[in-house]
Image (tube, rainbow, N blue to C red):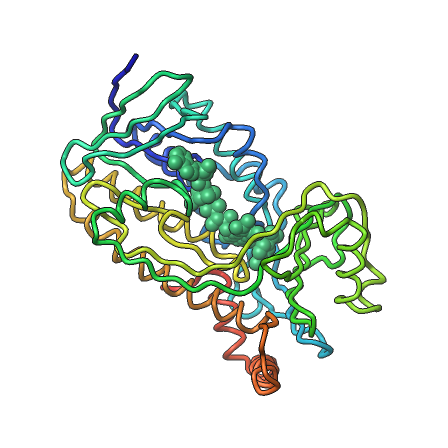
Length: 395
Ligand code: RFL
Ligand code: PHB
């Protein structure tokens, strides 16, 4: 059996990019269908980003998604960097720029988006299999998928690839022969642990320890998120909770570790680090947004924020098309989004390079890292530049 229907904008992927685009277009009266290969429970349970730039916060507020974030999110006015045994360097975001970030988990943003979409009645197809996109370089693109053994064809004016790094949309764009994939991989990953214990510090700590990076983050005053640099060959099964806490305490050192509360993990996972950009982001009537178009290593806390920035530009361009009939802004999306993406890529690469231990690092490399840190510590101008990039002030 085969069914066929149409919508204005077909969105592949129900992560933050896809759901956010659906929400903004819905507010403008534009019909969307979101097609997702996982179940809603699976999407809602993924533990990822934790830090929102204030432009992201303002946008979520503007589009009516800020209520729970304002009540439960934690505004942070600064964070600390530590290099080996040197005293922590506090980056005073508020003092340097007048702005703050918000610690509010991607899980919560996704939950708010899912609820808003459900309340609006706009359709999301979960657990779709064999998702494929067709004819996107013509004026009549479509998406096909299977659900419960039934084949479906969805016709649309546009197809938006919000299906992440492993999705089908970028793969389809690649088949045109016009996609450039620009990539750097890093020879390590992050082992993350989530636990219902109070955070060791009320602000985030990013540290370069002689044995590897660590990050102390949080989701709430009673829920902590910690990361340790690990090798790419490492496996979560090698890391009992006890081993994780012992290694974190060792890297924190006795003074800081005395404030560390430990407890059973709610989640543990390893994420590889990668820098990646697809150019361009438009192929006729197919547009790539969020992780489908670019990946940053998480060190700069930029991935989700970049996804939101893409959607901001793309949604405005789609609304202009439907209200004024002009495709100019759609045709300008790729260039405009890529300008910001590359600035965030540079920052994320720089933070990653400063804060990690690299295999084969010579004493010279290590001393240069230390000098970079010390230069930052003594320069108000460099700290301001870092604060601006962390806040996503790129324009
Ligand atoms: P997602 O979240 O990957 O969602 C893509 C969705 O598409 C679905 N999909 C398909 N659907 C239909 N058909 C197919 N063939 C499909 N293939 C895939 C997937 O199931 C999924 O639901 O991409 P999106 O929406 O662009 O969102 C991007 C963000 O998730 C990502 O950039 C951030 O999580 C990155 N990130 C961070 N970003 C920040 O801004 N601040 C942070 O503090 C931060 N920390 C992090 C992070 C990412 C991490 N990991 C695990 C990669 C920390 C970590 C550890
Ligand atoms: C997190 O809380 O998961 C987090 C925070 C800051 C980062 C990356 C991840 O840079």
